[in-house]
Length: 325
Image (cartoon, rainbow, N blue to C red; front, side, top):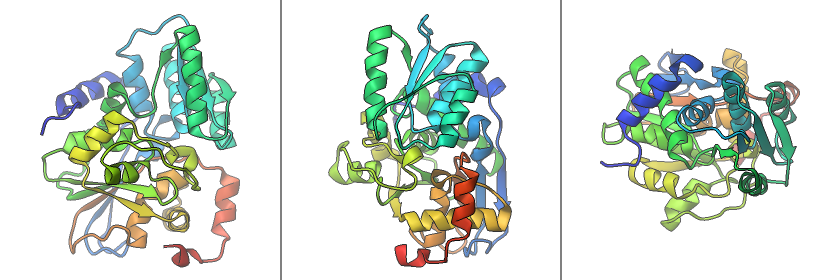
């Protein structure tokens, strides 16, 4: 299978960014821990610098492209902006991050604390992206796209490289999808090697699911508790081409199921996850993905930038999530 991103590309990206990122652990749960009789491996990428997987792609872009005097610019729901801010700070590069009004205040604060200039523009991610594009055209700043760029996808694919080394023999991996850069990198690593890569999207933010159904990238409306990290309106052509070839399918989950996954992570293991970070797990807990008996399943926990006050509120909600499956 020939894809725009190869295993060699991902290996090179990993060697390039290795001095700047954390090698996050993979945690093997005992059989039956999540109602599945086989082993489950949680890749704890929410322990990455800046609270999500995204520094991998940000560093790979900055280390492979010339940075102009104007520095770098990015549009983000929060996590990508924090990652770009962190990478730019480590490499001594000025950064301006455009975020929509729906961005979590906790994520905006992280971006500011890491030294980037924050511009709040528009209600949704697409609005911030448009404002960022105008700024780049005006100033010549280097664009660091959140998902639909080769350097980003190569960097995100290093998650799978590490995971395979830590947990060889997985049958299936579940990966949350926003714009699709993460799942594109992971699918590129495992393409043609017998590991089934399954995307997981909120029902109210299903850009990849809708695009695969249509046979081409399409715009979707976005309305989900995970919209600040999984709220892309369109996956873009590069992500779509990789996903169509190498992603098995996309499962859809309700916001209620995502909330229950957050609650489970905190209740059982004291892991504080944002909604997007818990989305892949919600597919396993809710039955949106049903593994075969004994199937070796990997679940990627991709983001931990949650407002603790909102997590505390969530933990005291009644157990009504089953109605929203």
